[in-house]
Length: 307
Image (cartoon, rainbow, N blue to C red; front, top):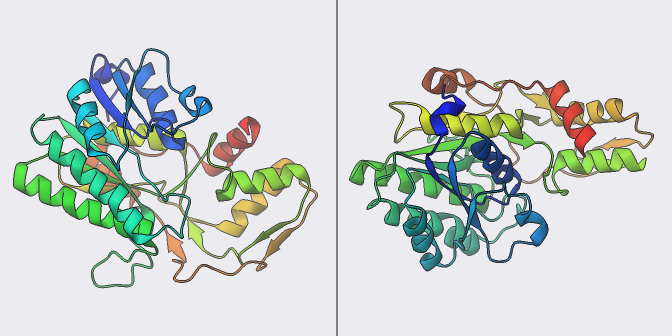
């Protein structure tokens, strides 16, 4: 596993730097001494931009505009790229053409320009929802168009690795939570409701998810960027342990002393929902030396305290 010393002076381009995960990764990279070019979407608010660490160079990146992608790479000339920018992460109803154009075509534009810049490592971000129910022969079964666009991106990344030896690694993220997460996501929505003393309508909550703290995710991405002999691979970033969603909401109620009621079954499951998604943490540890460090109890307490 890499140490902070490995990043001193390393030129890094980070797309999606103002997002939930990107902002945490940007801070980690800055602390480690990386020379950071932070990709900022032209429509980002001042509040989001203010999350960026002091000393980083802001570069505009719009995945729908290939010229901004080319200019960002030419400006930064990175030896490491973290590609986090995407659309539809919190929107399961995203339209297929939009997901394809921004997530897949945008990533292909990035890979196309990077093939002439010879970076040491390119980290692409996928999602555990690419696996779906894992009931298909192929092993991938996207639940929505966002996940489908990520599978398509992974396929193109594999092709670029084979055709041009581009050192791409795809990391599939499991149920990330932590400070700064969009309020419509499960954990911040539950915390906000618990603090307000309101009732919380939810699905039956039997679906199991691998909850991982955003701090661990940032460190896992950095480890994947440094690991040897994994170019062309895809790895899971999770804890390797799953928890029923209802149990996690109940834990939030316990930690906050909430007075409102949890209402399991008030909402239906989404069509095609996967009932269990858990990372292959053992394989990831073998390939990178990295494991998640923050347990669910500790992570939830930190998130509630900082909410």
